[in-house]
Image 1 (cartoon, rainbow, N blue to C red):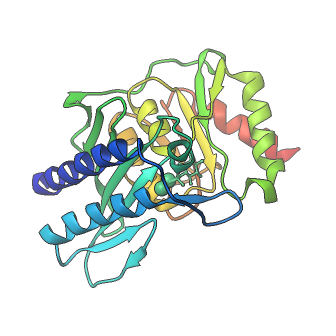
Image 2: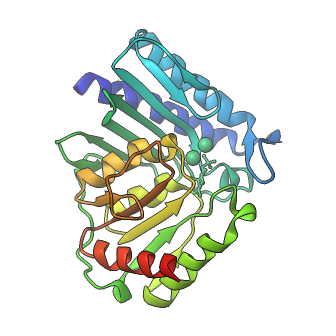
Length: 260
Ligand code: IPD
Ligand code: CA
Ligand code: CA
């Protein structure tokens, strides 16, 4: 597996550094939906990552945000978010990352997330722990929700269905020590993995938002499920990820919110 991780790190560092360098230039920004945007740098970063991986693993499949899936007969699929946090990026808010995950027979086995602004490289291989700049990381040991710092995000369809999302937000705001909404799912998941956040929930995520980050967080000791407590599926757009200790408390609040 080492080779997969090495190549994923290589392309993630390269893409992340390029994305940061290009942030100083004037970007052309296109809208994909009402509020969902894409910059020319998303496409450049994705091309760099996909081409770099393809050159080494020509028989693997790819699922990348801007170009979608490249179907081939392979047990391996690379899942790529070339800039997670594009809205932040387009507004020069330096909270974004590059994310590369490798799935084998439907299970993520390698995850790399690189935050070029903090120069933080998060890596994980299935069963081998999670690392920040090569140092092992662990989720926090906070066990009470009212001492917890939580993270969430709002999906791009937010304007069409704000009620459920705002209900969770209100309910957790009243129970947690604080909530952050940073605008990059990968940053939320890696912050959970290294103990900065204690819990994270979100609706409307895509596989490329979750692939690498969920492996890194779970290898760091996180418990990750859907919002009803059932097994996570990165192709189903919902996630509850915690340090394990506050998971049941968060599930209870989600249950109460929905029950109303
Ligand atoms: C988005 C970010 C954001 C989350 C959105 C994602 P993008 O990814 O992760 O935090 O709330 O649902 O789509 O579009 O910046 O790659
Ligand atoms: Ca994303
Ligand atoms: Ca993206």
